[in-house]
Length: 425
Image (cartoon, rainbow, N blue to C red; front, side):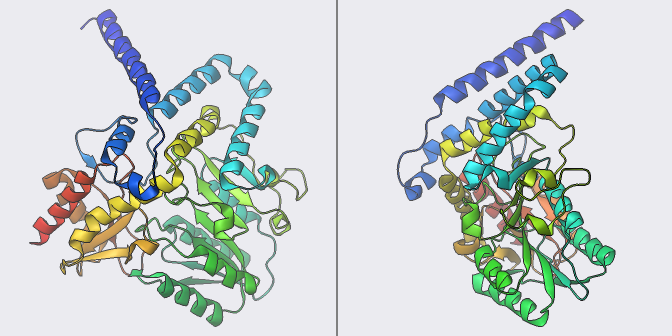
């Protein structure tokens, strides 16, 4: 094919893709009815599926790495990218601060907090690192606490913090599956056995298996003991519908490029006003405790990603956070319910919908090693066309994480259950 013909072919395809994006944006209407009704309205969720560029060659049930942008959000991101590329430093120096301000306000409104309490970052990890490295309220004899259900890299960072600040580090191993009371008792026991805890990491939704922690109740126990709580919401915001007041925490870290559906490269840090003095400003930033923005140094980032935050939140809100949460939990139930009586497997995380999210985990009974679970993951992919991911870091061993998205059909979850039953049959 000549270069000219190839160029025309790809130009036509590119133009067609933008036409499709525009049409999908026009055809999408907000749902009508109760959450219970919308959850099982397959016609509505098919319309949502049409808002996304869907991979056809495999059933992708590994949607937890980052979130796919909806077509209207992707189109907005393309538009913002073209503007930044066209205007370059003119835009960055004269207009970006206004757009960043608008994005901060959109996030603050969604979380129902003050704009001064939240600052955008490039990801939750950046937010977390700034909190722990700038934390400035340790005394001799203090301890820090984390759990095996926390993000593995954060576990390593907490261990580093223990060594670097010469404070005792305690890691607790939580039940691989259980109800809310099981986890409340585990944290209560940890607090009673370690009365000198000063700082703790508490994960809202575990990236290992999707378990939802009773954050508010745990945070209340921690506050009674004077413990600072960093709540990891990297995997929860948009997967679960909540505001900061629902969690009752003073500090929280977020990713917007997972379940909120922003472009990759957007996170956030929340610090309740009145709590900033325990964390130093970022090196070189101005002093002061009135605005969390001086705890972050954003540096040169993907301007277009931040510009797209209001677009992503608008799309999220148009569907409705409660509708998304309920639909994703329904998808979890669609594959776990048929497997509850299968004694050849172990289902990790939640034991009922009360502490479940749309994410889940399982493994073959007794197969605890990473290698054994990697072999099962590959079997699902090669024999059944179902893509998942192996998670490691739990004291109970490895498991396979299953993560659908709001555009995933129920039939795909049923195929997973059928595949597991066939493998174990």
